[in-house]
Amino acid sequence: MEWFDSLTTLQMVFTVLAAVSSLFFVVQVIAMMIGGFGDTDLDMDVDADIDMDMDADVDAVHADSTADFHWISIQGITAFFMMFGLVGLMLNKGHGMSAASSIGIGVGAGLVTNFIVARVFQAFRNLQSSGTMNLKNAIGQEGNVYLTIRKDQPGKVQVAVQEHLKVFDAVSVDGNDIPTDTRVVVMRVVKGNTMVVKKVELSADTEGEG
View (cartoon, one colour):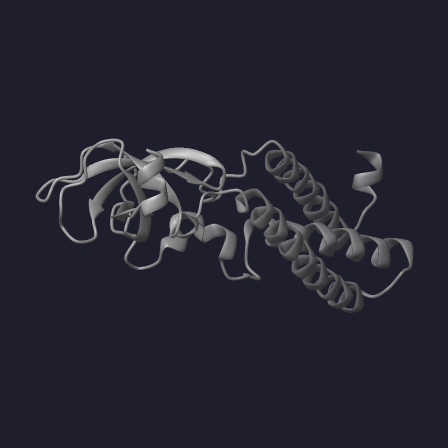
């Protein structure tokens, strides 16, 4: 406290900003490392019960992984004030620079740190979301009908997507019934994570073996 009381008003401001921002920054890093980031990463297994608009873009399942880079973020702002306070205090108290110079250089250092930290945190978000299931990878994959697909009622199919066997709602591409245990191939994905499937045509040799 004696050291703090010996500071000028500007130096006190630098010190408080640096201390509080550093604490928040450390908390944010810890939260990121343990996965409690508080952002919108979709860390989940896609199942037939998930209802989202797939017509717009199937990539919406992992939208955060392709989110645009933003300068302004909680982490960036925290990093800005942390570096602004540290650099400003060092220059003003340690090197005797004027208030204007200390503030100016502190702002510049804060902006650079803001940019770097925002990039680093964005990279971590992308890394976290890289394993999120993308249903476009199901297109062209073969699977089995789990629950009979009827002309007027969707059924269910089991399809391996990104090495995970999942059950999805499914409809026939031609509107015909497809019984349980029939081999099908996914043609496309539509609203509600519904697979549009087509019966796999077996060759004559395969039918003969059966």
